[in-house]
Length: 384
Ligand SMILES: [Ca+2]
Ligand SMILES: [Ca+2]
Image 1: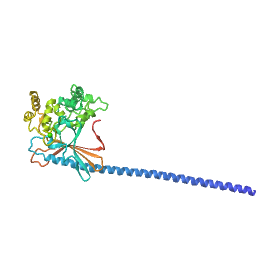
Image 2: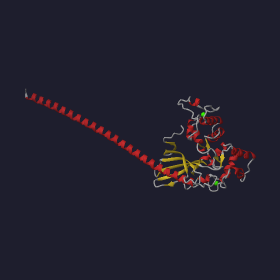
Image 3: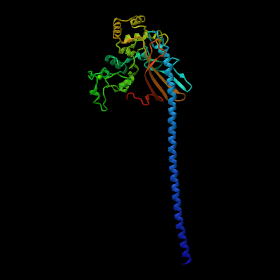
């Protein structure tokens, strides 16, 4: 072999060896990059998992603290119920709530604040007021409302027409269906609904044929929808004896009981006192049922027809001047946090002077509200 040929052969051999070496190094580099990539994804996965766990724990801690503050608010309201004079035989709005109640309008705790009260429409309790929502601080009287377990069809119908502004025929269908839902039989009223209707639904169920345990149960009743429910919600209850307190009932409830517009106005005017504002110091109250006509006559003339309306209501045994069943709505949030814990506690006041406890809890509902969206309750079982 010539020298030049030998050189070429050596060069080719050198190049082949180097090419194999480069390929091996390239493969190792790719493997390292893959490993690094996988490790990065794994680290990211672990990081996200840890982050979500930290978020979850932080959320749980916020919920725990806000619920403790909301519960403290309930205890404060229970104490106030215990302080209502047991010897007093009547109860008016001023005894339990007001628009500027210092005790309930924003009680500060170390970590947050609690408010006890709820929205209301000013014209529900006073004449000449707007229907804009305001805040009433304090305790609400469940006996100011219509009990959907005892109310008659015509009362439910009137409340639906007045509050939800729906046509009488539609209101009658809902009112009749409410009666059918709670009565024991399976005989449908003319515009009502029993098993034969509910069995025919896409997602069928039984008619309950038993009393309502919560007002939210109305979601299952034929004809009821979310908008109608929201409108009547402030005026209905499942608690109490079914007697309505004429000192605390809202305009729509008094009208649902069969009182005329004019007579209802007269009752609200009397209750508000000189300043024409409800739930404050100069309010007047009916101390017993038999004195209602005489008291009303102090401010305005009461016609024979109005006397008859009040007599009928008294005779039907639907009216009272006192209350023992209340709603405590306590809403708490932590400082610098918008998450709200809302407790609705239904409370029966003890009437026995010798009994030390203020009373007992009838119902309890606890919700966590999303910031700025009071109606959208997490885990809400409400209508829709
Ligand atoms: Ca039935
Ligand atoms: Ca007043």
